[in-house]
Image (cartoon, rainbow, N blue to C red; front, top):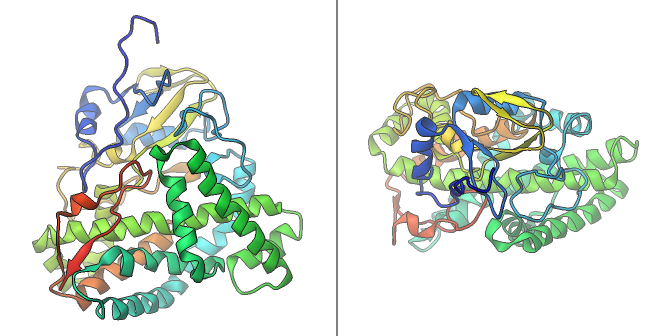
Length: 398
């Protein structure tokens, strides 16, 4: 930018409960690829169109390494290099470490987990119906369900759930500042390093044990890399799905005709989940990249060393990709949404998240057919300053 250029608009962190920030609707047509202000003099490019987002996310000339000078990070201070951060890696290290996890999150493996997910869902609903009404759906259902699943899969004691969720929330709260975010990550990192050491001596039938005995013990990965991988899986494995379950409940309750159709036709469930993923897009601070060489996107040259923010929530509301994109419609084909990203870094746990949503939401409304929101408007419980959009609590009655 030149000194006479106007300061670009700020990247929105605010948003309505079930929609992206209003600015994105204008920017998709008026300025689909333009500068945005993150903080100080950081003015990366903002990508809002679906086609451009897919192109950038699939292009190896855009790096995910957040320690590169000029990377459009969440905070002005660059983070220290941290082992095992897949989201901040490029090949070949990214390829090497991701390959270790693929078998555990492959579609076939997740299908085998469905009975366990159903069992956890039923147990939590049994617990929920015993609560005094109104009850907090987040506390008793939408948060513990994905946390229980990922703890079982990884081999993490669910008894440590309060510590895990508290540190994960600290890491995900952008407005808390870089030190608080790093402290949350470091606490989980140290905790999982200790657990890995225990698993190496006394392995079980879980992913952490496999990493300890089959990857770390053989030298394919360091203990620090394994702990870093596990931190990401633990955070991403429950924060995003918990938010989707909470917001998905609100969205369906506010569209009673579509909820009624969903109750009577189970074949609609997979498509409804994809539409919820498209509409809600809970990862709402954008995916971040930096150009390693000059790249042309949508007729604009992004220079080497310039940062890019890909606004997934805008791309998922792009009218050139989805007809009437602001309309919630469980009958539409929403399969090309970008809620899980795209390219090398597409979400490793997307099959698991889909399974949890496809099982838990219908079970909730089947068990509690007269479920309703209670107390204040759900908007009043929305997170503030969090990288993952959602609600801190959700009082319901039935």
